[in-house]
Image (tube, rainbow, N blue to C red; front, side, top):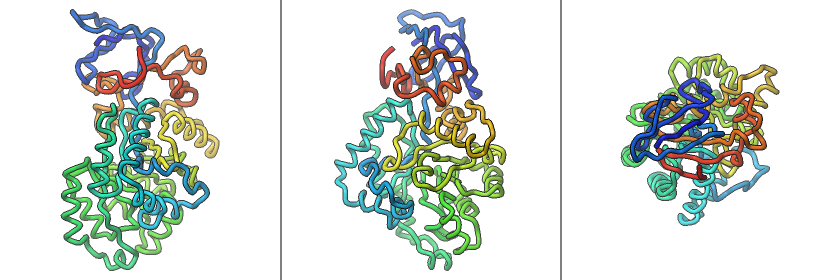
Length: 396
């Protein structure tokens, strides 16, 4: 396939090219340049007036709770989503698998229509939960990265005694990791140092919630005399989620350990738990990406996430932030975290792409493409979404 006369956000710096041609071979980007000409029997699509950009990566979701949208809207964070006692867990436990599957499918379709081509999900429910998500998303043109979880948690007494993971749970974990992409750990306050260190030995992607609330940070300090982030790093995670109450020293420690940080600003806002300081994170040297978190709390919409984070960050800290920095968080920063074949348009990357109407009533005239995408674009400005070289939504 040859895409002609398209505007493009290219490569790791999202360089804006006013007009160029892009060749797609199979699932991947094959070449970019004005000199590309059509080959015999090659499909040619003229994309004059469209901006081609990388498909969005939603770096943190809990898509399984799609069935519980806005339940307990005024409840605090612990009563909502605590991994043991939260009413989210009761909803998941008491819902039929067929109902959960249908609502997960709906959330996947919603993400595709909003330009999300990859999402990273913390999947509760053990092996059964992993299979449920696989089944729900199997025929939808989107890439789920599934981080499973065993149904085991420790209380403060076991944590203080540094009790190890039981052998039965080690066996469950081994089976789980053969069926998903990695491990989504609820948080350091549910596990002893020994268990976190055992998680670190697993040869799979590891992710963990950390410093989401001031109370969770305080619990960690009371129980272990360490910050939540210090303990989270015992699991040697590839990514830490939230970090809303991570200190500067915590962030520097994360950066030294080359641990990516995923922020979920709208979810934190909806839970009345503050806003992550992405300026401080970037100054500390962290690679920052964005997730939309629980569907029961938040719609999986990266346009709204970018707009919210950009303006609230500047409003609170009174520091200007380039919109390109925000756009990178949902594209190339995610590529740095997950591998360079997604979240970026360059040779040999997956052809996961969004085609935006430059002449949309909300975007024209497009003087700054980065600002236009971050705080003016929406699902309504998308002409088409491509996943691995195939049209996933819309039309040319």
